[in-house]
Length: 287
Image (cartoon, rainbow, N blue to C red):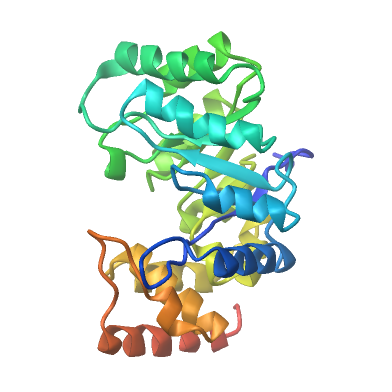
């Protein structure tokens, strides 16, 4: 299947640096975001419920219409709408919308009602909503049938699905039944295969630390070092490991090591082990 002309491309799930008081370190966030775009990422996907990160990036010249995706993660409809409106104020039409995660097994009917209420509350200016399927985190999955119902009910808002399930079978089902949507693959190991079958791109954490290696799979070409890096990261607390590696890459390890509770930073020994292994993998040439 030929690659889509209007591909979503590579978006970095931007890591967030914190100051000593655990407030968002806006200068480092901006610098990392701008460098990620310069390194080949097409857009930045930022999370955070208060909007400071998105505001700072827009102020630094990031175009909210084309280079910014605002993450929405909430249990209540009201909180989700508030998070989305913070992005709309900046002129951002693009959102990564996770399902509500407090109540488990709500069923497709309950999920439809919740997501429909959020989309209605945000209104037509939220014109590029990507539904976020990451059941290992939310414990709430988005079925193929639910996605079909949502895209038909909100055709001017629901434009894509990010599949971070790590299940190739689920990815195949989405590509088969929802080829009219942007299907984004969160598991970098599956990206090249998915792009060959018509996927539209990715929002991924590895783009924080290896955007150069991500260019091949975004174009449907396997890069064996990607799988090696993912397998290396998985035994660690992944968010802490990614941030530590950003600090290693930027030669700014102390600032990038800070985490917000309940997450903890990697130990010095873990960092030394991780950095040496990653450097060795990156030094290898692709087969």
